[in-house]
Length: 418
Image (cartoon, rainbow, N blue to C red; front, side, top):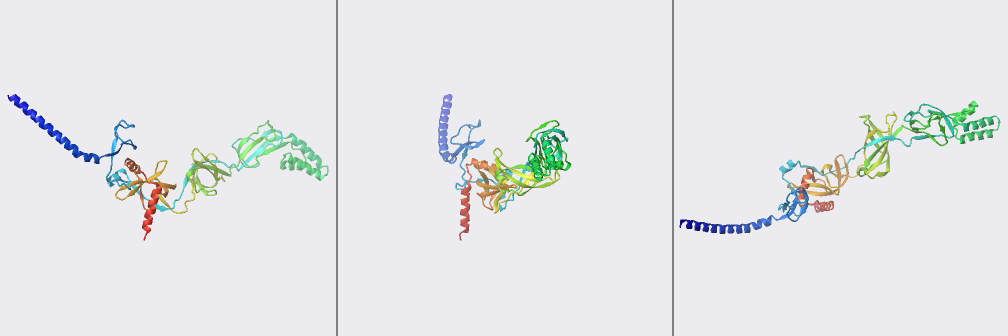
């Protein structure tokens, strides 16, 4: 009897407990419905790839982890979506602001180049008649020679007969025949100095001494004792070294403002601390397709002969700056995506929003802004990538430069109204 009573009591307790549990669960679902609705997810995303949004929960296709829900932020202004960051967090992130200023961008380009021979100061020694090399003077490629320096003695059989005819006509007393004979020697390619020596000595000169036509460095020398010389053959090539060329390349995006004739400063590692003033003589017509650069030709004086082709040099160029004042911001403040340029604009109440900008020239760590900002605004110069990532998580798109420009015009128009 006692056992029966205990079982009955236990059954009643279970029935009461079950009913209470069902009532509490139903009430909990009813009370929790508004909360679940308020916490409705906007989308789901993988924290490792926040730019990719998903419309339903599940497993990330990129990483072995579940997708994370992104909920609506009541504090976000729908008309001007921004990211709000507390001052303490800004300090931890290393956020640094810079003010958009108005000024003139002074441009300075530093490019590297290599020295080369001046191709305009170039001479060639060719054979004017057939002959045989009887003697050379110990010259070699790379030697520096002065104008008129002897290179080789050549036996010219064809010129021997012409010289005999010229000397024979000198005793005829006919001035016209003598002038014709002299002219024939010149047309045969005989140097005027050799003709004068024949006329002065009255003797045939079978050997002709080939000399350097100009001063410079021997680039090629095809003279060897015993070799046969044929008319028109190139025997020597000589480059002058009074001036040298400095060949450099500048990115095509920064070539604006460069002009022929402007002065440049060159610095050579071989002569530290010594600046050489040269002149930009040519902006070559072709550009390098692979490196997207324009080739420059700079002429440097080489009076002392210290500059040697093949040396490297650093060049300071000063392109003409923009005539009007421009809006300037630090170049490090720009987020360059490859398709557009974005800055994080700082607003009141610790809010930030991305703005697309159109950039101009860049120099000295500053870049000109052609569209998208106005003077006095503040942009994030450090830590902007973290803020931009947070903006991407919130789905905030950067305002285009055109839209931002229209907003600035509207603000200016309102301020100018009486």
